[in-house]
Length: 176
Length: 143
Image 1: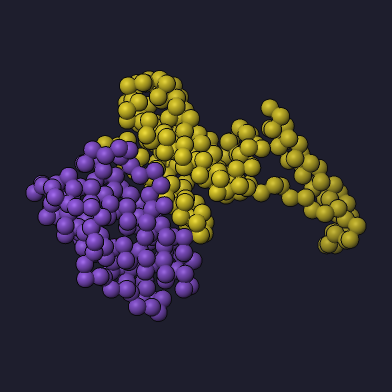
Image 2: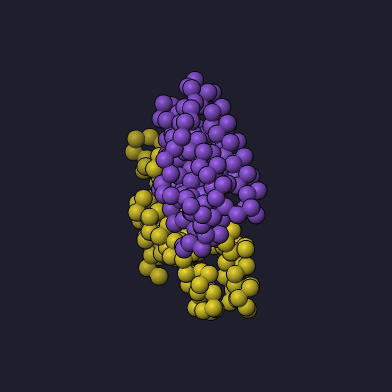
């Protein structure tokens, strides 16, 4: 996966630079880097919205997997999946930095970060189990959107809040 | 806190005033079994109104009063009309709180408005479910 390689190379580059800077400074304990010292290279910052959007994207895929495995759930899930897709598209358009990071990293480090916050997808044994797992994933995404809405400002905060509200409704519909 | 934040809270307050008035019409239209639910929601909106008024006063402004009456968006002639009006009222409340979120610059105002937006969306969903509307849940509540 080319994107992962790029990501790893970036991290390795940062590590090498840090080690080199440490070597240069080894005999100069207590000194600050002078004007000729290489500039400190920082790891690229992950936008706070990137894992939130990734989680919602993965939720769309989870809906799809459940629908493919259990077509009898089409009536219950189609609208919810369509709305989740609409949320994702609107959020990607409203958060260009996160959108670019998602596009750049593919299933790389960002996905690894996100995957720890949702239950590991397993082939559902039956429709009830699939719905239960889906409900957990919906709940996790709604929570992430709520937190993000409180951290954001202006129209983006309102959009995140709206998506959080809609996703909370989905969670409720999957409960009843 | 800012002028914009107060403006957002006032917008949410106007929506709550409208909902409280509208639920009077809803209560008269829906079935007797649904009336307790309407009373509960009326109480919830009154609590929201009071909380908003406090938030506005804390910011040195006067809460806007309710209008004497409001115009119905459509005629409500039966229980079905009552259900549709209730969903419409909650959509309006969600709109007020979404605007309040967009204008908020304190965590208290934002957190209160977000919780209220989610509650309004859930109530809208409940009314739409009862009236048989699809999709049941709003795609972008408040926007």
